[in-house]
Image 1 (cartoon, rainbow, N blue to C red):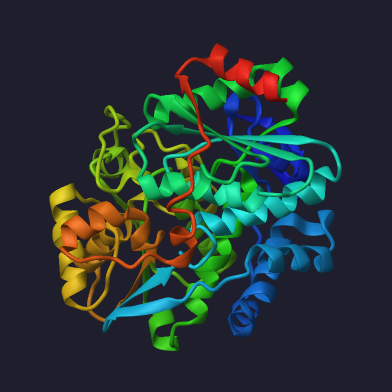
Image 2: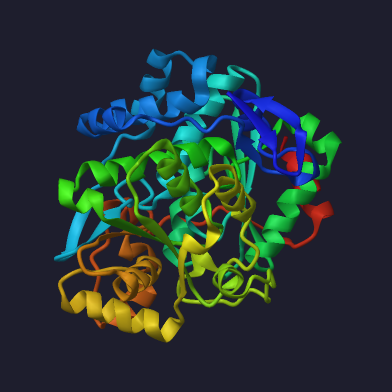
Length: 428
């Protein structure tokens, strides 16, 4: 598999290099050189297969002969060890529930596949994973790498800005997982990660790697659950399918567009954001004008400069699709609350991120179409806000209950690169 750097097309790397490097020169994102396409017959046959076999075939189309099909299928089986069911919500809308993994969030798919790929590629060379999280990524990455040999994980998160249960989920593991609470917002954490990757000495000393959604292995893994969603739908729904994606960093939407590029029948996508509406404003008026990031109920989507947007534009350019065919909506907190209550009234308990995607879908679905929105996290991960909005008590799933009373093991640091560098070198 060949990939090129979106900022410098001359920089071309293999899949293994892209996974271990994370980013290219000038912090450019890697993008597949070839965009494979399955025939309609292939797609029909694949939709009959089980999740793991089909996913191995999808990933193999991108990765090529760098990993043998048998090895790939074994790794996919280890990564995707839980289901992604589509739950009916209304007559013509279903939720693709991506929160049945160990950390109850969609990031489990990408995080676990990336862990499998990295350990396969690096063999017994020590690797340090450095990543920033606005909540869910941290837990998924921590659990995916926990206890794997020769891997040290350092996770930065904005202190006091993620939910207490999210924090418990990944800051109580210890072992090869180090967590650092930074005095600052998610963008400050992200900036520290970028500085670390610009520090050649640090990179070499620690075998530094990133586990953000910018890593191509995470992105490729996410393509697989779009196929899994379609596989569960009746034929008439497959022919008129609209998918609404809750969007922050835009990795999930990128994966959906890659699924469509492979031949998956999706009529259109809707990019649903919260008040951090850089993309909806851009699609509406043609100007890229990020505002300061606002804190919202859907905190994992509080991103005003989405990392993956250049990849979205590249897919549209390469496929000669028109960007104005992408649906979009920005949903504020009040509407999000009202939508969560509306969902509860029809018998579906949801959290803010999925509620935004549902709202955009319900407002834009046309007669005869079938809609799927992505449920990216278990409502209990946002228990405090969900309970306050719905006026109900949520039972804690066992994955959260067994960590709720454990002590936090995080370091605290200012948003200062020198301090972070010292911590990383000292423990390295």
